[in-house]
Length: 90
Image (cartoon, rainbow, N blue to C red; front, side, top):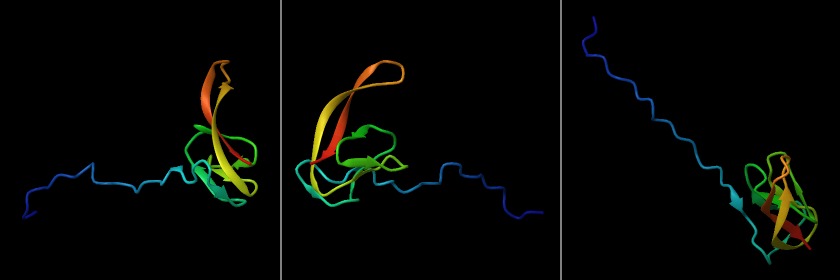
């Protein structure tokens, strides 16, 4: 027989580290080819001229230059238009 009364189990004791998402290079800053500009989940910010999106929605610089951010209107699949931030490198 057990000599200690049964203890309960804890269900809420796990935690994962943060993903370090967000803007890594701000407007007006210089970037090199391939440098990470924005880390994000989903396309909250869109890639414009001089940038490309990788498989995990990270926006990279496609060429050397200066980063700029601008508000643009995009049409969704449903036909609704929404405002999104466009990242470009010039």
